[in-house]
Length: 126
Image: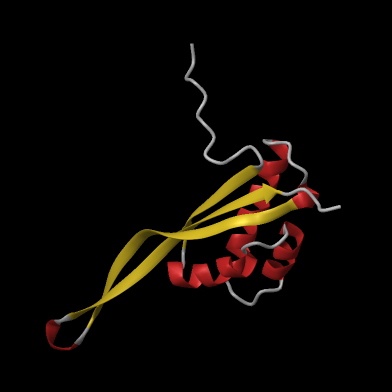
């Protein structure tokens, strides 16, 4: 006897992907996440492909994973997917120090973030 099946975290018409330990601050990552919220997935992929922000490539990878999850795991039509949610959270912070004058130290914080992207299948209006 194995474990019982985990309950779905999203509804039947949705699929989710999560990217963890992305080496940027949550504030910078949220600027890229704002670009794609509510967009159709093909438009969002094009937006991320031509974005000048470094972190856009990480977000694109997570979005592609969410699309693959929708297609392979949940049998959703990829042509009618939109980005339903894209939210950002904090992750760990590496703490480093730098020598300063008179025997003191300066604190250097290197933040990590995580992003969750939820795609949803919508019916096309006739």
